[in-house]
Length: 140
Image 1 (cartoon, rainbow, N blue to C red):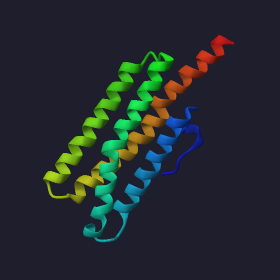
Image 2: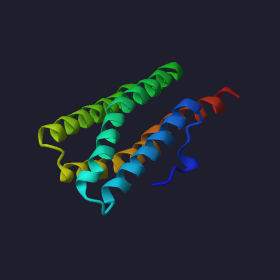
Image 3: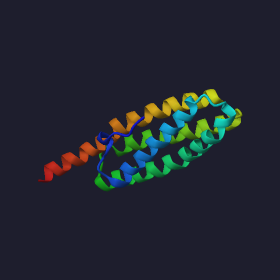
Image 4: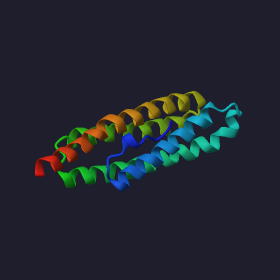
């Protein structure tokens, strides 16, 4: 999965965080698709899962702060999407630890995470950028 410039919102911090998320998720998917035995992939999988648990909270906080600053009218709906994803990541992490580092669960998680990231950044987050662009045009 390659970062595309068309995903940029024009907010440096958010764009850098999105690029980091794309890099980490790409690496995660690559590790999961590797032919290396599962036992040798567990450390990287655990590292990525721990990163995601922390980073999505930080990123969503920063993104929501920006949305509040610009008066984004769909803030509540966007925040709910974020909250649902944070909850999903926490639930998967908990199940993964409880089930003894289940590879199948991580395969499913990676697929959902990849699809969610692309769809969210390319669609939901672009609505924020569109709102900003329209505001700039209307002010001129």
